[in-house]
Length: 174
Image (tube, rainbow, N blue to C red; front, side):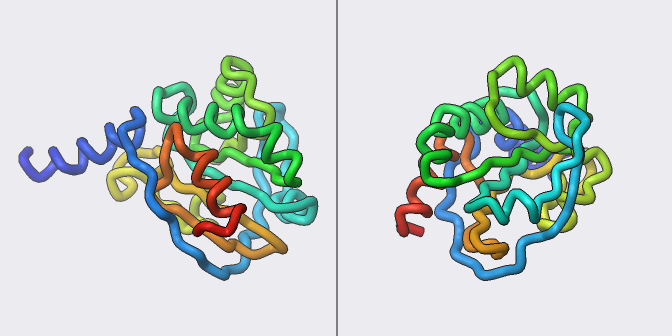
């Protein structure tokens, strides 16, 4: 039981919003060309979104939980400013389409939420599931894509500071 406690602490921290922002890291990797179903049942091809401009792809454990809501709402609150800079946002979790639709509606999120219950998009981005896959929830991570390349990733993405992290990177302060 003692060995499980640090894992549970990490899980609850990620899920319920106790995670602190990490600095992220500059990278230069090909952006995964995947597709998924959004909250409305429509297919979203990530490469088509990347082609429209810089794209934030953020992964969150579970729709409607406090940390995930803080992360999603941080990006919602900054959406107009980011959109003026040509930035597109996609949120991804292992929740199904109905949960994504409810989450989006409950919080008036202006961007697509992608349902990935099989974890195919997670795998393409190299995003792990919490507790080493013992639970079906995505770990909290964030990626910034420009020109079809992942230029920044944060494997310990923040919750309420997610938009600030993206603004910092877009301003050149990686």
